[in-house]
Image (cartoon, rainbow, N blue to C red):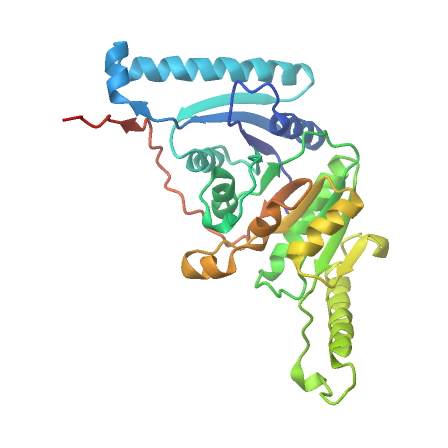
Length: 326
């Protein structure tokens, strides 16, 4: 995993009193020796009738809103600079917001995108199209979604790996998950743990004696043995001692949040394979499904082969005309 040198923070509300994502990104930037950019996309639609009534041109409106948001970001940035953070600010008229963030990340060659998690709970998150979900789905750059306002203090970083690739994750994705997890843990003077959830328990049919008593227990024991072997092989050069390797015979949707709570994890690192269409509708995405249940921040990575599905060109101002009443 390449060293993180540029961090882009997606600032949703430039006038917010509390900005956990900004402050945590600044903490990471200082720890990693990285540069930080505070970025805001003006994605609100402009009503043509209101523009006419106000007697403003489009350029006047754009400049007024742009300058107002930049001023707010600069106020935040000045405090961060006083703390030793290398930080710039940027505001662009573009929509939708998640596309604007990804376009900006591409242009600035960001190594990490940081965004604050919406507080709402989603019943079926893989069916919804909120900016949080779209950043997860479409970003080829790692995305850190900040859920907790607590600063990092020698954090426990929990890396969720799948060495048997039961969820069709590419083999190299686990190495990337462990690599970036180690970066975070080292920079923040924390500890890296690894978890592998292997339920449902499965073994090859030709290795089974179907006449054995307690066949289910035998299958679970064999599955645990295979999972442990795969995990030990995956982590043999990872520097994670056995005491920080966690093998859990549950589905990842249950196992990862439960272990994160038990360990007091500040960050969970996991991989996501973006799916579309009916396959996505039926299967969803493990990272998305457990996001609401996690008590901490979550860092989501994509395979190196993932290609961002976002148009390169900015869309500019979104105009809306009020329907005529007849």
